Length: 204
Image 1 (cartoon, rainbow, N blue to C red):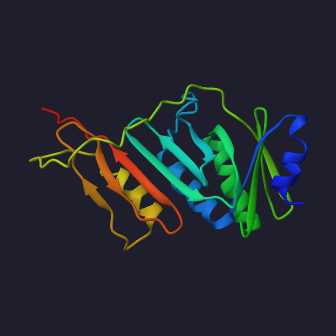
Image 2: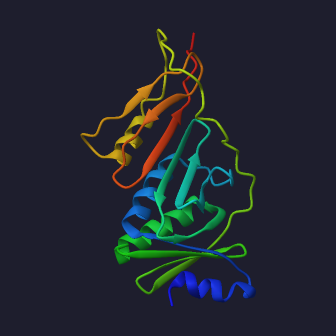
Image 3: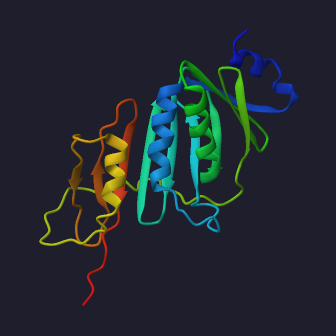
């Protein structure tokens, strides 16, 4: 009996969702998402990554208010209800991947406010963060690309883009008008990415 089948068999005991993905895809997804999560632990909703599995994909969203990134990977089977995971716990999952070489299948099982991540007979259990995560509906639908004369942005952010796509891989930048988010085109190995960067205001 597979992990998903076992989960369905005990749904009456309170299991909400179960999902399986390939380990190397999950690691790439999470390592990219954590670059955009806010580092301030007092900002519960932003010092976290939102995970959701539906429609055959696992999606990760993260923002620090200046940037937004959304990545998705294909799942083997199953679904996962929207689950906000703290940045420190996401890093625990990444560490698990490095310790046990996230190869093959990884299962994510959510029961109530607990999420258990299992790989190669090892598992960790995380507590879902209770916070109002900002909505991003239609945020990438900004109309046509617009030519502008000058724009300012924080160059430090671009170092994170190189961490996501790797050295020697192009990053496409599209400008959508003055004081509007910049669209960042990232080409992942196993992850489909979308990203936005807010421009900075010029100082007089």
